[in-house]
Each structure stands twice: as structure tokens, then as C-alpha cells.
Image 1 (cartoon, rainbow, N blue to C red):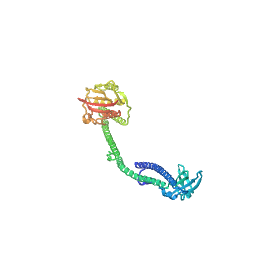
Image 2: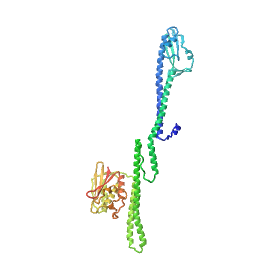
Image 3: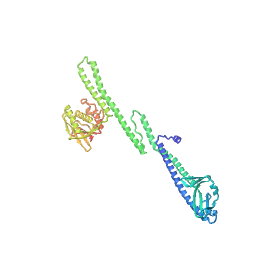
Image 4: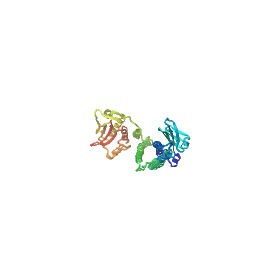
Length: 459
């Protein structure tokens, strides 16, 4: 069997092999049960039929035994069955119960000399050497004791024919079944094989954006698998593009202060001795740019850590947390921060990360709104969530920019002035932390002017 499957190029770890092996086991068990049931039923019916024949023959012998000896010719003529392989022994009995005469049908005496083997499960069935299997029946009357042996060889022949037919059907079923399984498995696995080859080809294209895999229409499972692979490839391509853009933006953001720092260092070296008045301005610039680089590196490290971070989320009182955060933050800004909070607002989240989210959005609001404009913080409890809104009255964010404000290093055009410090990573970190809290964040306009950030926490 193994050599046959090897010639058919069937991998023993494939689904086709598993299906064929299961099919063979089921077919063997079914065939064995069919053989046992068929042999048992046919044998039982034929034995009962033979028993009825024996009774009829004995009755026929009684009718033909009208003189001192039985009329074998009349008995054979009266019998409906073939008597050529039937043996009869008749013993006449006197009134005192003694055996008077014994009569044998043709060849019976020779038959009785053969060795007999009894079958314990069927006492009436006997195996006679040189003759085969026989059914034995006897009957005692007031005149004689009748014994008859009927051949069952034809019964065995019929059972054998039936069993051969069952086995032949099983063999044909095996051949046809295996052929159909191979045909169907190749037909079903061909789209999967093509999909695997396409995936391997895409995997060899390292460092490049991956093209979509072909999507077969059938079977449905492979179609859904190909769609899922393409969705995964699209996600990986998107991540790769974002990582490339992130590296490019980070390089650009670091290159600018580094160039300035090197320029001022070079200036001090060349002219610092002759013109010492330039040294304080250069040192001030170096201090500011190095601080900016420090913040940039810290934000980059924060983003890198957040990508692999898992927060411990617990129910907390958002009202209490915001009251504490705003009380500490109010001393750092000239903006008036107003709170509209319920007495108690339950939210599911991580306290430290929520504090970081609120501070980052407040910093953003302070940077982009005039000092005389207030910043409003509102908490609203919903059915299964709690919404936190932080609104400023600054210049606002255009609809085109709203879709990108959470991207790394993205800053709106009005914010690209060097007068407004920042790295463009604050809202990207906010977006990461919101996702880690299993919350949602949205940006909307604050009418009549400004921007509103709304974070919705689960309860």
C-alpha cells in the first residue's frame, strides 16, 4: 500500500492520505460487519430451510414405508428435493421396543463409516470426511426410528458466493473510492497549492511591499483564506510604509537640530575667541536644541515601548482622577481650565496612562490656543461607557488634517512655525495609549471655534 501511494505521489502528511486512510478503515470495518451479518443471516435461513426439508423427507419416508421394507424409489419420486446426496437409516421397532430390522438408503452404510466432526454451536450440523457438511434429523414413531442426513454443501457454496460478492463490491468500492478521493483532493487542493506557491514567491521578495495573492472563487474555504492573507499583507504593507515613513521623519527631525548644533559648535571654534559675544547666544541655542532632541528621543522611546506594552485595566473614578490632574496642571499655565464633572464617573482603564493622555492633550491645547481662552473638560456617563471631552478655543483643525493628527511627526501647517515647540509625536503617543486602554478617541470642531478631543472609555 505504501509503495502504491508512493507511486501515486501521495504525501503521507497530506489531507488526501488522511482521507484515504480513514476511508479504508471505515470500508474494512463495514465490510467485516457485512460479511459477519450476511453469513450469519444466510446461514441461519438456509439451516432452517434444511430443517424443514428434513421434516418433509421423514414424512415422505413414513408414507412410502407401507410394507416390510421402505420403497426407496417411491420415496425419491415423491421427494421435492434432490436425494442424491441424502442418506437415510430406518430401524423398525417391535411392540416391545426392540430393533427388528435396519434399512439403509443407497450408499448410506459407506457414508456412516466416515469420520464425523460435530459443531458445538450447531448440534444438528456435522462435518463428514470426504462428504462435506450435513444436517442431521431424527424421528421416533411407534413403528420405526428414522435418521436422515441432508447435505449442506450447496448452502456453503451459496454462502461463499454471497461473501465473494460482498468482498468484490468492497474491493470495487475501495478502488473507485480511492480514485474519487484522489481526484477530488487534487481538484480541491489545487487552489490551495497555487495559493501556497504564490505566498512563497511573495515571501522571497524581502524588503518590498507585498503584492496581493490570487483569490480563487472556489472552494469557499480557500477563497476566505486568500482574502484573509491579502488582508494580512495589506496590514503588513501599511505597517512597513508607516515604519519607513517613521524612520524618514525621525531622521529628518534629528538631522535638523544636529545640523544646527554642529553649525554653532563650528562657529564657536572659529570665531569664539575673537568674538566672545556670540558664545552666550550659541550656548542658548545648543541648550534649546539639545533639550528638543532629548524630548524627541524620549518620545521615540515611549512609542517603541508602547508598541509592546500591555496595561493592567481596572475600574476607576474618572472624576477624582481629573480633579487631581487639573489641580496640579493649572499652576503651569495661564489658561483657565474649567471642569464639568459628575460626582462619580466610572471608567475602565489604567490610571497612569489616562493621566498621560490628559496631560498630552492639555499641552496640545495650551500650545495652540491664546492664553485668554479657556480649556473645558467635560465628562458624560453613557449606558455602557464614559466620555471624556477636552475642548480648546484655538485655531482649530481642518477636516483634511483631522484624519492625520494621530500620525507620527504629523503637524498641521499652522504648527510648523518654530515658535511652537513640539515633535509631532504627542498625539501619536495619545492614540497608542487610548488603544491600550481599549478606548476610542475622536477629533471634532469646538463651536464656534477650536477643537474637541473626545475619549470614550468602557465601564
